Length: 381
Length: 70
Ligand code: FES
Ligand SMILES: [Fe+2]
Image (cartoon, rainbow over all chains, first blue to last red; front, side, top):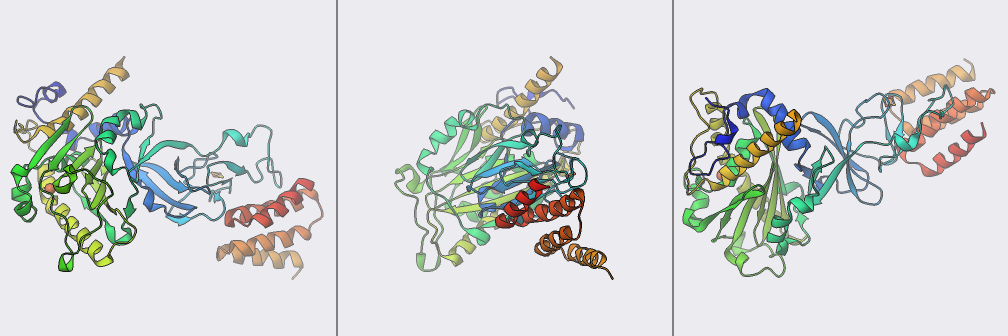
């Protein structure tokens, strides 16, 4: 079958989806890693994961060890999780750093702001300095980051356009939801391991076509015709609902709404993928962010976090709401895994899109294809 | 057992238990058992590193100044 990506970037009606190799081939995965993930602004995790000063979590991002750290002034930074001396991994497990980050190898110490504090015995026993070792140039390597809606987006290459520039359109679209978000805590997150390429999880989120079949429960009150496609070529895609039914607790209790929302959101809700890997939802009473973390060509993790308009919400309701979402995400697993298996069929040509229903999926495919095509152009130039 | 090998043993034990606060103390104590600048600095450095590790600012400051004098 053809590996020609220009078939993917053709208009929706006549385009093919991404070829099989983009789901099963290690070399394509490596290419995506460099061109899409390291050069772009993928989501890494959420800032609520490091609530306290000194909180540190090591995360392997597509094989690259990173460290998310809340510094003394409360600001969150991302670093490459290695010592500048011999490249040893600095932090192996989630912890709170009370003092400095001490490298477990020769004990070079770094502040939580990333500054190199001391290089013990670097000039010989008991001599902690050396004229050729300039501590000012040997701090931790910071990864460019931008926090939006609690999601920590990173740009490893450091030279992408600013996040706010790239996502101006979406940030404007959802401006009304630019208000404090309260993570529901331990009862408002879950992690699912899926045996599929990361893109299948994204694609499935972009579309509403599958709702009546895969989520019949959801669809009884959120019918297909009440959904609309969201396509912003080269930017983002997803779906909107005109008939959002909010979560009801016992006796019809509801979560508090976000403040001052316009009428659009009384019955409306939107579900959008921030390319490449962050699935966001806005609804009047709660929002969520799901980060799809690729772990190999054929596996990914889905990290879900739910947020409310107030820090004071009912724990049981939160728990039930989270459970409901988890069930919905679980309903999708057999499909994304089934499509992954299907990518082993040599006859599959990337598939044909429904011109009416698959716009958002095609929008994503075309974005991926263009990134790869442009990257190849720059590399071969 | 002489003082040096005694403290040596205690240091090994504290490392085994990853008791950093104790390590600060023991390395500091050890520094007093030596007379050469190099040796003293070595032990003060060890103490200093662990004081940074645990975030004991007062201890860090004290040790930093002592190190400067050696
Ligand atoms: S590798 Fe970190 S101090 Fe040597
Ligand atoms: Fe779904």
